[in-house]
Length: 274
Length: 290
Image (cartoon, rainbow over all chains, first blue to last red; front, side, top):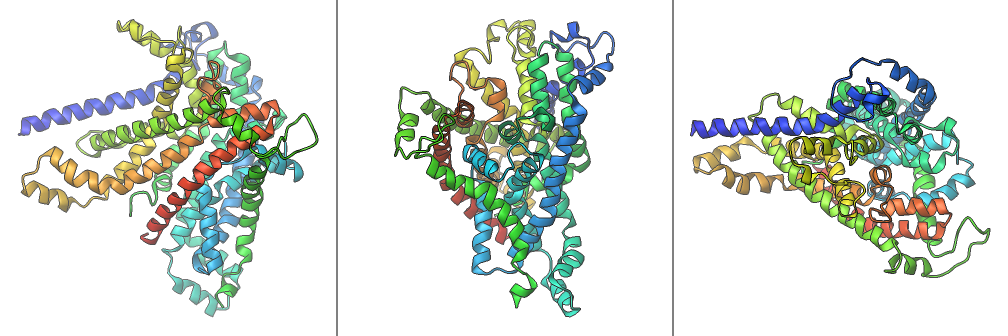
């Protein structure tokens, strides 16, 4: 019995390592090759760099105009987060607290968006009519809009756990709706707002379709589009492409390491109960 | 009274954004799909079902984009859910450095599709790619293929890359499901002398059903919308062999044939409205039990 048990534990550990290696090797490959010279990187192998070329990163930042696209990405992600935390949380709060017929309907109507596809072609028409096409504001608004359903869903669920008595106490103290929300309720939403902010950041940072469709000028490109176009120009220089890939992924990797708990809870919430 | 404490204007900002940039384009798209809207002419004329006839005609390549999308969705759903369950069971207990493994397996799902696509463009390169070099070195050269170039393998390679990326996410949901099973059930099963596989069959899997359902729903919703990965890895090629719905829409958009492009989006819209309705029902049931 115990011997059979040991064997199964050993097999389990071996499988776990094998899967982890399969997950890790592609990322490691990029890291190793980002430090090679052009000739050695052309074979894109797992052999270690003969000499370390840290200057690859500087070359990429300069040639790929990464600073510019970094700040673009930051602007898009930042505005989407701001809108999600301010506007979307206010909406979710009222929809969750005042369950009139209309509000029930609106809640369903909004979370239907979790499933629905974006019609990029006719969206372009709307972008042109509203003069948002090929503008930074337009992209930021799109990033915010696409997050509305998931943010409303997460915040709405969380507000259900906050006791109504708090609202009542606030009203007795003579709070206006705005003060009630911002001074009393919103601070209690911190855990879910952190989750929403992180998920919004990751989604915004990784977005590719919206800028591909609606940004013509490369000066407004986010990092994803910049790295793709850099690959188009320098696909023979995998050391530089690797460095670009690494720099583009770094922000999400850092956020992942810092906020792993929030990311996993946000991405799996509500998925196991029921 | 309640509407005074929870005023409707709190909802308006979000609602406006959502209506303007999400709902209105979808509805406009329904109308445009019955027209000859294009970049070649200023006029837009009603042409009935003409665009849909083109999409569903066997001579054109649009229908294969649709069937590819469905095949991609079915294949990735089965692979990710199946492997996700197996790895979740393995990593749930009895493994050293459990959190390290879980964190690592989850990591690809936070990366951008573009990044993953570029990395695998290198790995799957027939001459210099890591996969073929590795296969040749361990003496399995007959397994080394033209992964993204050969008609036979290109689409399956995309499915494999996508599974690599999304597996950890699905596994994490299943692990959360496993941990919500009360240990008493296993204790009772042990007293009855149940073996590992009968416990799996009669305790674990039935109680995992909600988690498995949600992973299937997530996979289907995601699979039908696939774009970035295919765009970077093959851009629909060779020929139209790996074309999916959204890459087809982007191609039409680039060619200025907006009518056909919106009509394809409408097909997706109809498919997803049905699935979406059931998803929302499912999510709502959960929300009550929070």
